[in-house]
Amino acid sequence: MYPAFINKMAFSKEHKDLLVKLYNKEITRKEYDRIVQTMYRPSPEQAVYKQ
Image (cartoon, rainbow, N blue to C red; front, side):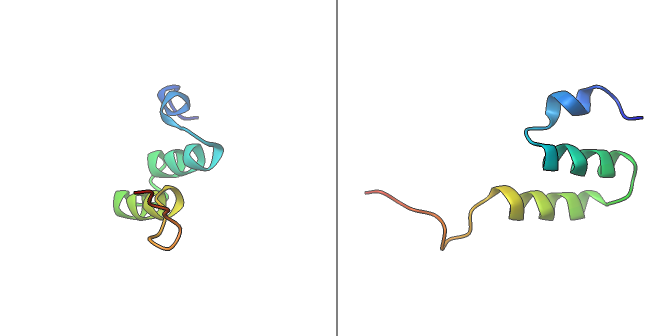
């Protein structure tokens, strides 16, 4: 079981799964950061800038 604060921190099901893996030491913090960045930050091609 994992702490209840993970439910409060997670902003999606995928993010919650990553937090649980991090808590259970199935992934490292570096792996977690890299996955979150690729999941939730748009690539330059996807970004649309309005001027």
